Image (cartoon, rainbow, N blue to C red):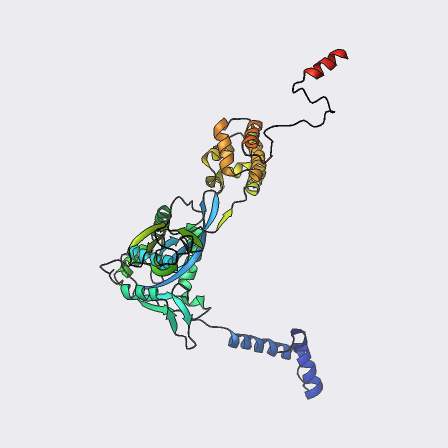
Length: 422
């Protein structure tokens, strides 16, 4: 392919036809032909797609990433989305990570939400399900994903690598769920509350009209639901077994976190760990439960840039009550910044800009609780400095500037006598 600037133009083609082949036609004729031929070549090179038929009971699955607010910080969470192209219904389940245990638990919970199992499910090549892809396109699946498929009896279809458009419905539904169900940013009070919130959002969404058919999504889903496989009699246990050796300090390492066993197992002993999505069960060599601890998820949190938030509110003080960041503040600070008088609100926002650069939201709220929301800004500033200031003030002060012989007296009486002489 020649560089773009060195390709034949319509004018240059006409010049060569005229000079080298004695072409008798006009320039307009050549330009018209070149334009028509370019359009034909563009059409030949264009990618074409086909509308796919999606029978009832066929689903697509994918993860998407969302942000939730936990303790005045942004916490990264994952949302597993299962969508049904036939009815446009969707079911979602939030998880703290995208690992194998979270994926299996989310699939189990979604099946229980819908009261059945899709006959056929499309996946991309997510690590929780696929170990690697062979040269011939065969997938080596993880052992636990094979257990899940056998337990619920659904057929698995994998997309080609880097071909997300092959499951375009769930790709679109992931974006839809983030834009509509995660705006404003959900508050993370507990995992169960977050699960209930998203389940309710998905339920309400099924009450709207289908984008193409003049019917409600819920009605179409009721038709599709009859095509689902029945749930197994016994629930699926979503866990993974992992071996670990107790070190000389009586500890094991799991998820990059140290877990002490408090002398329950001798150093050098191998233990088995049942890794559920939310807890770890430590088993000795006789498979007896010796300890159970919560799964040490830390989550990737990010500090909310409160000085910038307060600066934005200061420019538009009437926008405070409509901002999504307001409900992320402690209740005392919410009351403090929503005072009706705009002049007072601006003064308080100016103070909060300074305070948030130095102190945490918890420290500011503590000072407000001590003095009340109507306290003077100077009072709150003073108590913050006294309680949480970083200045190193010595417990005792030794005076070293007076001349020798004048440091024997600890009081100021000597200076009073000198003043009397003067």
